[in-house]
Length: 126
Ligand code: SF4
Ligand code: SF4
Image (cartoon, rainbow, N blue to C red):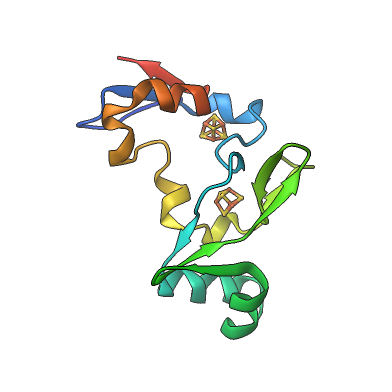
């Protein structure tokens, strides 16, 4: 079975097999924003069986009018608080935000394939 994903309009393909050994480079590394919508906040809070307000205080910070998931420092880099280093997975996988679900197919990377390749070892030139 092919594990290569190709999406119309993107000048690259993505081999999902790379995720098994890459140690979550899209969830770790340089500090960044992991935006969550109102719906996503409710879904994640529900998955964690938390009140939305408690969830916000514990796991989110505000950036302008948006909310982003907090990060924690690990050695010289940062990682999403929901990254599970032991299993190399996401602790809220079933409710992870759209930003995470759609990676590496972001509009931003359509014209920045070299930058994307530095982050994600699953990227294949078309
Ligand atoms: S950086 Fe790429 S290969 Fe690594 S976990 Fe993320 S999507 Fe998978
Ligand atoms: S929410 Fe999950 S998939 Fe998204 S950055 Fe955090 S650990 Fe990674």
